[in-house]
Length: 369
Ligand code: SF4
Ligand code: SF4
Image 1 (cartoon, rainbow, N blue to C red):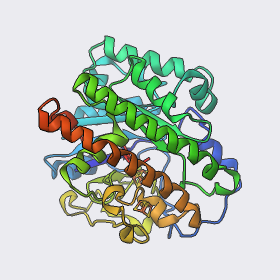
Image 2 (cartoon, rainbow, N blue to C red):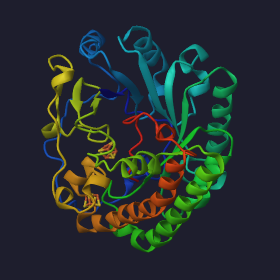
Image 3 (tube, protein in one colour):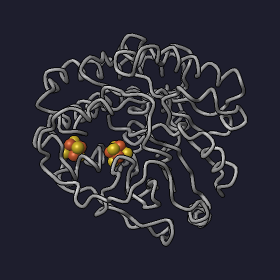
């Protein structure tokens, strides 16, 4: 099982699609987050003994540090890495404090997801002046000081993103092993301030170009670039497999909140009605599943999409405008279906193997943007 550990809600940045939105007026959601847990603390405050006891009952536990910015509490992260009965650690970070973590700890992460949005202008516009240089600098430092895990550029995509230019920039800049992107869409009640539907036309066109470019690279090299929204989706299309919610939230991936409660996903902070348990008492191997509901379960591409996002499915921050996001999922599906025949020809000819698609699922990449 995969677990996110919320180290702290604190962060040293104020990115445009995250903390900066706290000051905006919000549209009414169509759904409800339900009862809000008032006992959450800013920093992890549950007993570490309870955390270790909980994790020790799962022999395959993978622990991902997340925040806020988890490295606001570097000593806590090191303490958990020294003592938790877990073999595999991952980290989701904005990268600004990563160089201060000793290399002996940095190099133990199997995967690090570094937040960056594309080129310098775009990243600095959304995340703050100088952040692009800091993040690419720390990516180079990691590689030059013994980090041999997977380094994923984790992009947030909004209306000023040229998806083709941004993904190819990060794939080719020499800093990262993989690229993942997630749209800033249907996460907060901001639809009335956005021009998403208009922008999604150019985004969809960019996705079709990217799929063609991904195929071109596969043909040229015989290897599969790790562009996460294409990777497990295409692997499943080739294998004829359908998928549940691709981030794994609520059945393969759970989040341990700062007060020790277990939520289905790190964004569902404090949504007490959807908690799956508490580290003091829960059996990690018998956590209840938190399912996706309608309209996704009746959707004709549910087996491809998996429902995109459990949080959005429950809270419906964009109301009926969720359909605008579904249009991008359908476009992704159609773009990938369009390259399947050529991939099959390569597989049949032996110039490509299914092993080339292998990757770790539920590693923090949300897969469906
Ligand atoms: S495309 Fe939309 S309705 Fe269909 S499964 Fe995905 S999120 Fe749900
Ligand atoms: S995509 Fe998954 S991990 Fe991301 S907010 Fe939605 S449910 Fe949570």
